[in-house]
Image (cartoon, rainbow, N blue to C red; front, side):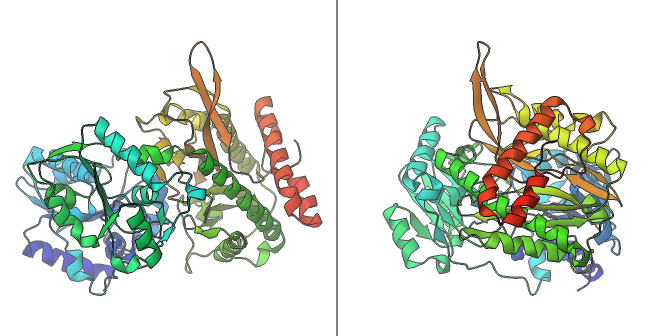
Amino acid sequence: MTTEQKLISLRKLMKTNKLDAYIIPSTDPHISEYVPEKYKSREWVSGFSGSVATLVITQDHAGLWTDGRYFLQAEKQLSSSEFVLHKLGVPGHKDYPEWLNNHLPENSTVGLDGFVFSTALVENLKENFSLKSISIDSNQDLINDLWLDRPELPKNKIFIHNDKYSGQTVSDKIKNIRSGLKSKNCDSTIICSLDDIAWILNLRGRDIPFNPVVVSFLIITSDSVSFFIDSEKLTDEITKYLKINNIDTFNYKDVESHILSLNNNNILIDPVRSNFRLFDLIPSTSNVVKKQNISTLLKSIKNEIEIEGMKKAMEFDLIAMIKFQFWLEKSFTSLTEIEAAKKLNELRAKNNTFYGDSFNYISGMGENGAIIHYSPNESSNAKLTDETFYLMDSGGQYYEGTTDITRMYHLGKPSSQEIRDYTLVLKGMINLTLQKFPIGTRGGQLDILARQFLWNNALDYNHGTGHGVGCFMNVHEGPQNIRKEHNPTELVEGMILSNEPGVYRASEYGIRIENLILVKKITDSKFNEFLGFETLTLCPIELKTVDRNLLSNDEINWLNNYHQLVYETAQNSLDDETKEWLKIKTRAI
């Protein structure tokens, strides 16, 4: 079916079901960022392959709402269809709830599948739509009737994430969660988010691209742990492991009947990371406490073993990244974006504990690098040249930890504008790294440190400065972040975040420099305990695109010290030729 045919069929079903509008999100029943093929409904209908967007279909309009990371990509992928791009965060562009309120008559009905919408989102939509008496029918999975060859859920075997990597046993994690439940006067918690479940149970899987998690649900009470999973994923070893840890297993679909049996309970459920269908099944005799999953904050604060594992993963990545750049500079004239990405994957895979990529390679030459979440395909796959910047944003999943790094390569002679843009981005990245801050500081209070030099030159970037990062887990992890928008989560010792300012010139190039940073205690003073950042990522930063005159002495010292550490860490793992090359790349300026 073409996009046009899908829209025609969808609108017919809407009429049959008396729906005036239909909303299709990007998520799955676990409110995941990356989803199994079965739940790529938004992409199947529209053709837009970015990871975040929402479709709204009415009888006379087909709209796609997404943010600044995907504007250029969406414009290209939607150009031959009826879909209209609505730009979130841009003046004059309303978000879809407001748009629907303005375009639908009173007493209209909006359809959606509550199994793939978060509880918080459905409740927010209900509140918005009440202004015009617009109702929501949350039991409408229209896509299943149209997508005749819709994929099944994966049935990959799961495996144990050894305590030598996790640093904490399952029993200790469950004990801490029960303690948290007790402090909130709750008897039980329903957990839908896959990274929380994998972290709690010290289990990993291959059900979701890039995220080593397993499709499942989990219910923890004061005296039981119920794990809902397709039994085909379990091995004899896993069955024994679950039994030893007093974890009962049930069929994945049995979660609904179990929730219906939770009478007279005080139930904690995360409204942002639970689906509305399950929330709606909770018996009226039970009291619902809508709070963040207890495990989410626990997971974000890495223990000593996890931190050491992350540092090892960065060292593994360092060698792969050095060998990649050394090869790239010699071979680029015959390479494409995809070939370069494949080579970096091969170099990472030489490590025995490499598990896979932590996200899809963002390998962008020139104007493709200006598409913030660009991923090359056969039709867009550009050849590498020496005319402007080549951007590589990539990461690896190792049993020890997760990496995420962006480096810029200029294989020719950079222009004065390219050098200036690059140096302004670098200054922001360094200044955020160097900042000390008192306990209680939130990421939103630090975001300006990375943007200040760009703002002073009337430049900016349409994405957050930093996201939380998991340990052999999701590369995008909450609850912490560093971005303009308010987030009440305080930065705490042991959290790991990315630090990735950038600047993007449409049809020219994109620049982003990214390291991972660890929140750590710096000092006590009579005013407060102060925290700061330790840089975890190790990799040369391109020097020929740096204008030394734009850097302060503190920035120059940081860069020189960082490069000295890169060289000292890598030198014993390199042959003589590569070592001499690295000495030049990490020279003091």
